[in-house]
Length: 219
Image (cartoon, rainbow, N blue to C red):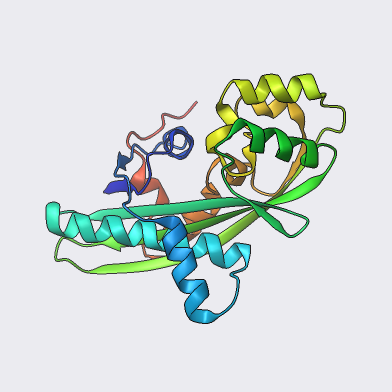
């Protein structure tokens, strides 16, 4: 069965490959800020972090499903969408994009604990054009070391790694040494919760092990 990841995130692709799934990659064409602004304006309220990531994960996956229906009408498989954001003291911290903002965030985060919210959307797309969706949000708490120095923060930010990730940190690369503890599914912090994706896949009537590109040989 084909698996399409509605993302070009190297971290999400790596997670799927680590568990035996070789996904196709299609970048969703979704204006994330415009989507959130439109929904919040229509509902006259600010979305919670869980609502925020769930909405964007579903929009990303739906966008790719719609494009596959037109461009690859014989597609038969799964489309997986995801979105993440980090919450600290009730404030939502997305991708910092600039070194100045990343440094500011690390000064605020050191020695503290925040929550990573990860939205997931999985569509089962049939060759006849039918599509059924399941979605869920996973959370993991992240505690940062208290003794990370200003020099270490500046050196980390200078690598460029934290600029394009939610919360300005990674747990699977250079940022790992500055994280003291993760509570919850650790893959949630990397990019998406694998146990959550498995749950959604099973809800859609698909056997998780059938997605493995090559069956693992017994030890």
